[in-house]
Each structure stands twice: as structure tokens, then as C-alpha cells.
Length: 150
Image: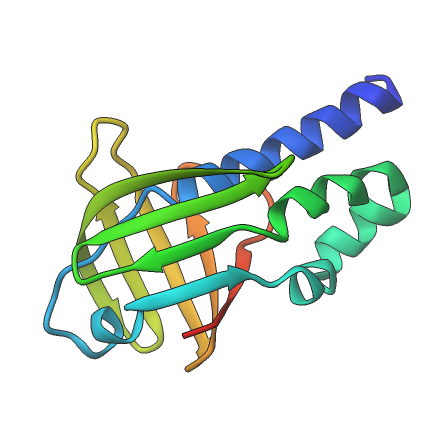
């Protein structure tokens, strides 16, 4: 695989994780289902500190430019929907999806999209203001990290 194709492959993997991580939603009376409600901003600094991401950046410094588009990503959770917003080139793209809570255990919330593309997302609460999100179908690659902004 050429260096250029590898960079594109890594960028696409990260984007797919991001895309699918945003297709979950929640509704439950559980503690974590209530804690997820609010606005979450992609945390570039924490994400870049992930050892797997650091290794990829060292091998392919060009990939760091991909992260600039993620810096504007927000997830806005309500009791049973999540709105994903991503701003690029001065334009904001947004989608709203319904979800349901599948389970809560410890600091992990599992939600499932009620949209046609389905899929589950695993949300791990690092603390009250920091979460890691990974979509079950995209288990390659690191989880995306978001910080609470309200």
C-alpha cells in the first residue's frame, strides 16, 4: 500500500468511527443516560494523546491535518436524540438521530440507533465532563473523545 493510500485509509477509518459514533441516541432513567444529556465537543488534545493516534501521526504526519475538521464536531444529546454538528469550510452540517439505551454498567453506556443504518455506540464516561465513544461496527481504531461544554 502506498503512503498516500495508507493516509487516506487511516483518515477514512477515523471519519467512519466519527460518523457512526454519532448515530446513537438515548432514553432511560439510568444515571448515565441522564448524564449524557448536554453538548459535547470533540477533544482534539486528548484524542491526539492516545498512544495509537500518536503512533499513526509519527508514521504519517500528514494525517494530523484530518484532525482539524474534527475540532468543530459537537454531539448534542437529549433524552432520546443526538444531533451531530460538524463545521467545515464555514458551513455547518447537522443530523439528528433517535436512539435508545441498551444498557448501563459502571461507567459505560450502550446506546442503539433507531435510524435505518442502526448500530450501537459504547460511551465510556472517563469523568463527568469527558467521554470516549466508539461505534460497535468500527472497533478498529481508537475511540473518539468528547468534553462537555454544557
